[in-house]
Length: 446
Image 1 (spheres, rainbow, N blue to C red):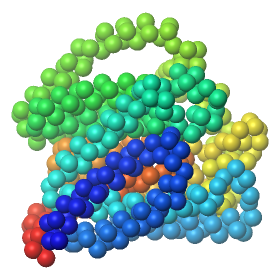
Image 2: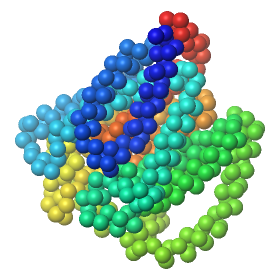
Image 3: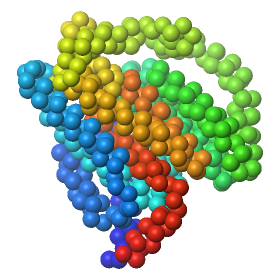
Image 4: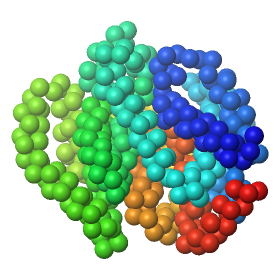
């Protein structure tokens, strides 16, 4: 098998893996419990395949190594603290969480190498298209989850009749409505990314994706997802105006027509939403009112946020008590005082605070620095479409992780972190086309 055939086989394998992890919730919905054992083994096989078969790159994997260092320190310090403090997380499966984080690190590396390879070959549009298809499938299964009889494990555990729960908040093939809303946000991001394409068909698909993604986000009734829709659109407008002169005239005209059409539809859409509000359930109406309060007054109704204010207060107290060594591995996944107060398992709902609370300030600083380094590096990307995708995905993911505490063990987030490592590495030296051409020559003939 020659290098060309190896690369084709590697590409198809990675496409299938990316689609699998973008739709990872299906494994939980269909109760494929055996996958919890087979996936880590499969990822080890893929790891070695990528290690030996992937094209050689000229850069050192500094961003991935930095990301890996932050996680190794998190695991080492938090597990040491767990042993020293002798905490008992009776509702947390420690071995499962540990295994999930370890194979997620493998996923990050696999997709880092694959995405970087696509960037070297100027074929990142293939990744955009694949992500778009995977998100579209996930969105369809989410919107019509009741019709397909697809309910996540979390929804099933809440009621003997899951159909009643999804009438108020859809989660589809994902663990919960908030994650489904985040995927819908990625769909909106990808749809707007397509608007920078030169292809008219891509723009048409992008417009359809915008409508579909926002509809899915609304169906989840996730406040974070609602806010993210606005953030993603605002960033799109900022990038469009900031790089207006660098965008081709034909592309500018196409984007202008789409924006004009969207603005012209705002009035009828507002009228429709006003009339549809009365048909919502009281719970749905309360969530919309809370979002309105949050935006206009900065107030939050704790009754509709799983008592997150109590969780944050409890978490900050624990952080202050052990700022350097933390409180132990995954201790912030279930906060004992807040959980005892409400009678329910309550976590910190913030990945950054989870890292700080579990392992102390050093892993937390490294984790934050990793995101900041990626953010700064992305500004070196000259291609407008790629720049918008990179910077907006980083902003969107970071914002989501301030309301979510499961990022370290989530395969979807691992795929995204792999994309960040690849984009940051590529951006660091993207201005030197001679090195890229030399890299392609070496890997084609080597």
